Image (tube, rainbow, N blue to C red; front, top):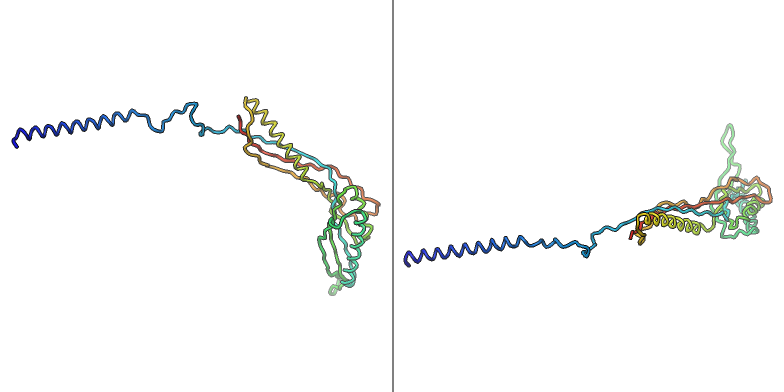
Length: 261
C-alpha cells in the first residue's frame, strides 16, 4: 500500500469518529428537554389520596339521676358461752330466728349472703396472775339485700327484734337496682350534647358534620352507694326504722371526632 492510500484511510476513520461523537452529544442534549417521569399534572382531576381529612373534635357531658330503690345492710350475731359447742348452737339458733323474721318481711333466701364465721376464746385479765378462760365467742355475719326500699325499715326492725341483744345491724347502703339503665341515660345525654355543639361549630364555619370517626368515654361517675347515718341499730326498738332515699346522680363525659364535609 502506498503512502497516499494510508493517508486517505486515516482521514476517513477520523471523520467517522467525529460524526459518532456528534450524534451521541445530540442525543444527550435532546433528552434533557423531556419532563421527569414523576412530575405528573396535579390539577383538579388528579388523585386526592394525599389530602388530609378535615376533622372536628368535641366533648359532651351527660348526667342522669335515680332514686335508690333497694336497701342493703350488714348483719352480725355474737354469742358468748362457757362451752364452744354451746356458743355455736346458740349462735345458730339466733341467726335462724333472724333469717326467719327477714323471710316474713319478704327477703328471699338468695338475697342473704353469709360473709363470715369466727370462733374465738374470751379471757378475763387480772391485775396479777395469768388470764383465765371465760368462754368462747361465736360470730356469724351476713349481708342482706331488701329489693324494695319501702320494706327496708321493717326488715331491719324485724331482724333486731328477732335477735335481741345478740344481733348487730350496721353498714346500711341505699342502692339503685338498675344502675346500667341510669348510666345508659347519662351516656346518651353526653353524646347528644357533643353532637349539638359540633353542629353549631360546623355551621358557624360553613361546613356540615360527616361520619363519626371515633367515640371515647373519657370519664364516668357511676351511681354512689352511700352508707346511711344509722351505723348501728341494735339498740333501736321501733316498729320500723325511718329511711329516706334521697337521689343519686351519675355522670359521663365523652369525646367524639367527626369528619367535616
